[in-house]
Amino acid sequence: FGLQPRPPLGLSHIMASLGEEPGILGARLLDAEVARLRAAKEALTNKPKALAVPGEQMLRVDAGQLKAAKDAELLKPMRVRFIEEGPDRTIDQFTKYPKECKLEGMSAQQTVLELRQAIAEQEHLPLEDINLFGQNTVLTDKLAIADLFVDWMGFGLEDWPPRVISKPRVRGFEIYVDVPACRDTSIWEAGRMQSYFDRQLIFDVLPDTKVAELKAMIASRLGIPAKRHKLTAHLRETLRDSGRYVVLDDDNKFMSDFSLQQHCVAVKFEKSMFDESGDFVFD
Image (tube, rainbow, N blue to C red; front, side):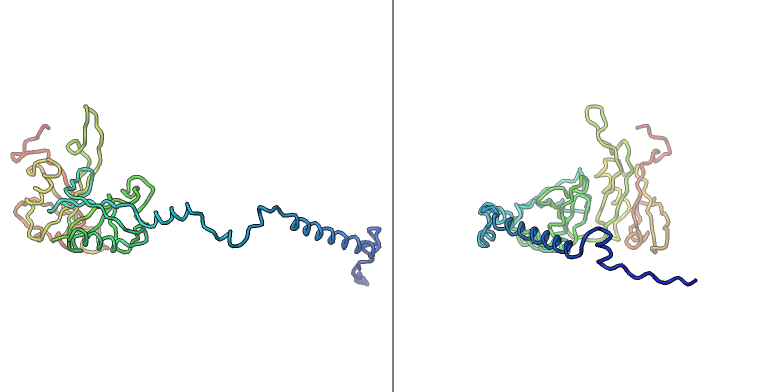
């Protein structure tokens, strides 16, 4: 439409619009920069003497901090408890520990495997019979001792140095028994219930262990007569299989008769409300 592009504004045009000459504005900017640099130099020159610390003094370590670091290089004695020998491998508030030891000279950077080796050497036991657990956690060999601390109640790992529990090797295979909360397993004090919760029992059994023997193990833990036990095994043949349930109603059958050593997930416990004659038991 016949419009011509507008030429760019130069510095002289801008200064003219501001009412300043270019030379005067440049002099003012230069004076301001010189003043800023002069103030910075004076600030460095007049620095307090307390801040002017020689390099050697900055690298000097406080004697108290050095002593604390040396004292904390190794852990305080670690407490290790051993469960009773036998098929019962359950760890709960009712577990008895006939033996315990204290281990000194361990570092938090060492692994659980090194801890097992130190315990085996001190107690003159085979390494296979030293398998470490927390109250609710299995402690694998690759973990560092520093990892055995969780500041959450309920994991059994809230103590430092950590307190660990040792189990012997498994002779056969472990079978888990799920026991629902009931009056028989609750704890009462002065007529008031103190605890009421589900329990999980763990037993070391062999393929030729009879159902009656498993019931005897459960009875020794719960105090419920074996004749009142009703056991149901949950079996899964593959990970894609939701599983099936088999009632262990024949006391003379073996664990291998139900393929428990291969496919058992857990055994579900129930207390039978009827006796051998089919009469209801009021208790």
